[in-house]
Image (cartoon, rainbow, N blue to C red; front, side, top):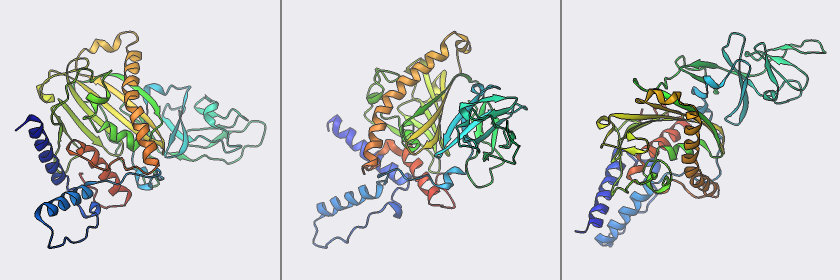
Length: 390
């Protein structure tokens, strides 16, 4: 039997295994199919069975991007790195279509207030921060981190308060709770694994819906085709790519790549990569590797066609590297190169999805983690009490 046929057979087996393990043959993804005629021959019946399986495994992610579900807002979201928020600065962000601005009060604790002055709706981030209060550039009204207006020059002080969001600082990141439900008492930890040191923290605004960006980040099989000028330059194309994960998990490891990966609800991707030197993989799994690179991607839903991406890179070797001059700029340059290779494709997907194309029409075996993310999000938005894979 030829190598091509063996490869195709293995791919089909892996595909079937993935579909069974992920329980993608659930009724919610089953197309209505009429009963087969008893006169159909065996080959025709087999063909119909294959078609039904294909329809069952499709996910429907198509059409104009819908407004975000309120349920997706009821999570803690990291929105900034602590090092970027100085005492006298402010940081405007969009989150779920709403404008906010983050700044530090007199106690140095961060606050998140509506980025719209109560007086004449001027964007507050165009102003300045004075003595722990943000001052509107239009008429000088000043607001504290609790949203209360504490100063109104040239007029009598009125009882005015802006809308605020719960805002806390933990482990070098600023977090907010945009939902209407009471915030959870515990903020999840996104610290790098033990033994790793942070080398780069980068924030970028990207013109794509955050779910599409997560789909891309949870997919490694595209690397040798898409990232031919950056980290995957020179990678060989495997005959079969698989993602191994527990039946109920949102994490696992890639084969044949020495990479562990996890989707952390609601919008985080964590990965650990075994490397021999920058850009080069070694070993069949991360445990066989002596040195590693750890990545955190946070995809904050700014709007239905915009994502605020927080990226952090950590290493468990070369601790002095982060002290080299201009290293942060080099990491940023490289990260932008990698993202640009992805963006031209993901923006094209987004355009076609808006016009009715289904971007998850035919998932295969290496799409397992992306499919699980989509099933988790679909269940969350439908209000399912017990979310899958958790």
